[in-house]
Image (cartoon, rainbow, N blue to C red; front, top):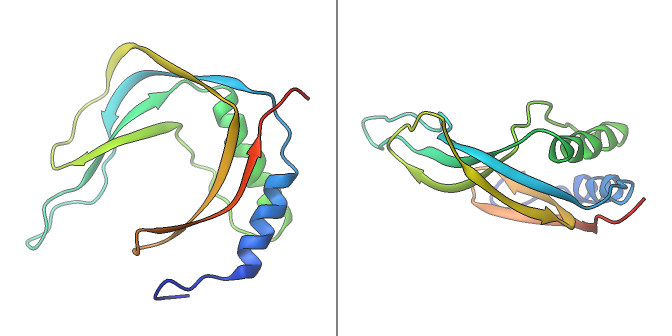
Amino acid sequence: MYQGEFDLGIIFAAARSGRRIAMSEFEVIFRHFRSFPGRPATRARPARHPFVLLADDGPVCELSRKPGAEMLREGLKASDGFVPHLTLAYDQKLIPQRPIGPISFVARQFVLVHSLRGLKKYVFPGCRPLSAI
């Protein structure tokens, strides 16, 4: 799978996984910011560190685990190292973690995103509402 191609079987399996998720709406709260290690500097390119807001654990982590378990049921790969965050920017500086006043929003839906690595292109195989269960 190169040059922007993707496997429709994977996309359909991921969409089936997403349809089996049932969760209520929940509040996502960010209380810290920091940089992730990201891409180190080379002779040809400067470092590129994601600058992120870090979310509290809780329902947002549960929402990560549920699709992962469903994707494994479909025979797909799923990451288990999720750190709930929101990327704001990329920079050469590596910023240590610091607290901030809470920033929050209510999550009312979730979107499955398939990243075509290295191409900066994305496929969205599913968008599902979160509602009372």
